[in-house]
Image (cartoon, helix red, strand yellow):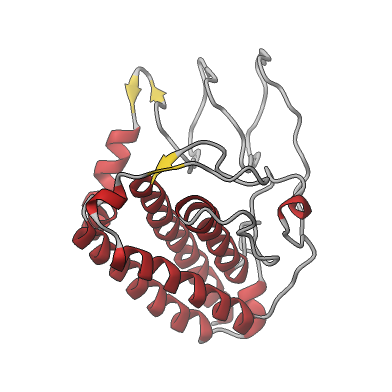
Length: 247
């Protein structure tokens, strides 16, 4: 299943548009300004850095509420090797339990999309790609880090140029085996990291890929931890729907 590519409207001024009941997937509102908007019952998820509602920057408020609901989430912001090890242990634990939970469902359900979001298997493939981007490409400097089964968002218009097969449809067991390899790579990297290594600046290779600018090792590991946590939340949300359907 694919998505219709939406219009490109940078710099546009849109008056009195009716988006009631609409679904906007992966829209780019960077620097956008919405005035006199109606958000009754709206549900927004995504990167909220710098977002202001009625003059109030909301990202810190959302972060504080998420930390209140999930106190263990604070571990993801660790800045030292021991703290990062603890954070990765948390990721291993929550995903281990969730994979067992998913396996209790009929296999076809794990390839089923809920509300047009990625299926459980697709989510695992995306997390492999996140590791390939931020660990293999950036921290390890691998020129061609991507596996053919990697899955990116609709922003990647030419996956073949990165070595990704857009028609790939691997089995659950094959994806789990690949995922285990990538998770082991992250765990081994964190186990061996030093404070000096965390401060090292990683420049991306020249080959096509993401990211395209330099980041420290710590920044790269934080992105991996955030991707793991956020997509786990989405996966659990959708598993609840799939379990209800199965019942």
